[in-house]
Image 1 (tube, rainbow, N blue to C red):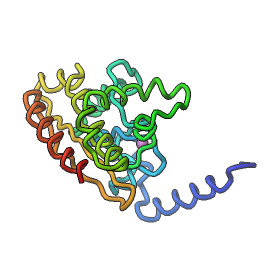
Image 2: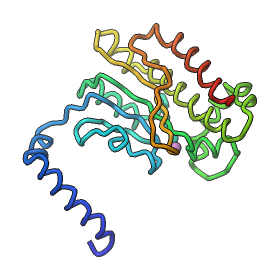
Image 3: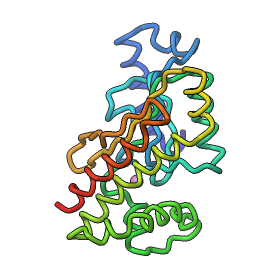
Image 4: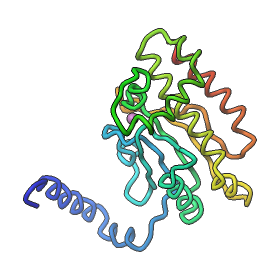
Length: 219
Ligand code: CO
């Protein structure tokens, strides 16, 4: 408390406000959480998942990493997905990227930042896959926006191919995967047109979403 006292002060006021609005709010939450959504977003401080979706504690299960990546060997992310799907039985997984993402910009500008370059290599792979499309963007900003969107689309594809999601669908569990982008310039969320509820849907949704974002990247 000697340092960062402001945060503890804020916390006391917040807890008091929550109790005022709903006296048994924390008691109920202590007993269990029943979120219907798993949010996989960027660690960026400007994209606070609960706030921008207007959801309360207990309503959103959250995993965040730099550039909102779903990597098949990332036990941290996979463990979150497995717990969310198999234990909490969420109905929706949202991959949410954001415009102005520092990780995406670093990849396009070839910036060297140390250890994190290894993590961002996955974004570099996505950039390589869509090189022609990215080269067609008229400005650097449009190219960055385009890669932010393409990166989300690729992560939804990665989600579709995880055994966790496949197994859930195989046993008939209702589970929808979504790809969203958040614009930090105006605080508005946009659906990228991906809403995958079965393994056979991803092909068509992928082509449609890439087609739509290429139009946006050309603007
Ligand atoms: Co970011």
